[in-house]
Amino acid sequence: MAIRTTQANPASSMIIDITPQNPSWTLLVRAVAVSPVSTWTNNKGTGKICTALLQDKAGSTIRATGFNATAVRMGATMKENAVSHSVNELNPMINH
Image (cartoon, rainbow, N blue to C red; front, side, top):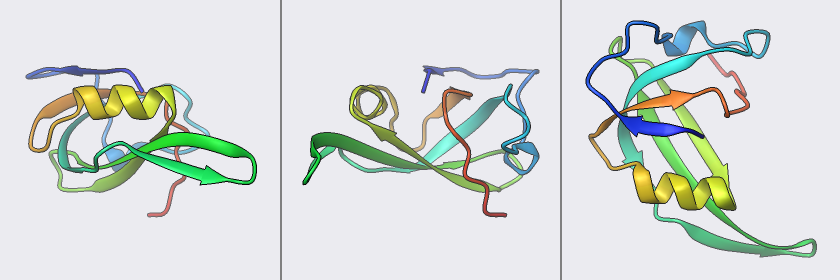
């Protein structure tokens, strides 16, 4: 997930407009909640995970989950109540 703090992005999409069929999007969102990066272990190995609840200006929310290097990057750059760009490195699992 590519993230950078910003004030405005006129080309940003709304969460409601994201679909798996739309591979190109950028969100301007507020991170409502960000979990700390944690480590998981299973029979395939270990890794890192970080989740964030993101909200757009219309009030729609989506949960973002990052694994391994993305989780570390999310944990380092996403802060609660900060406004950020979230670019389409995410694989949206839509559940409207």
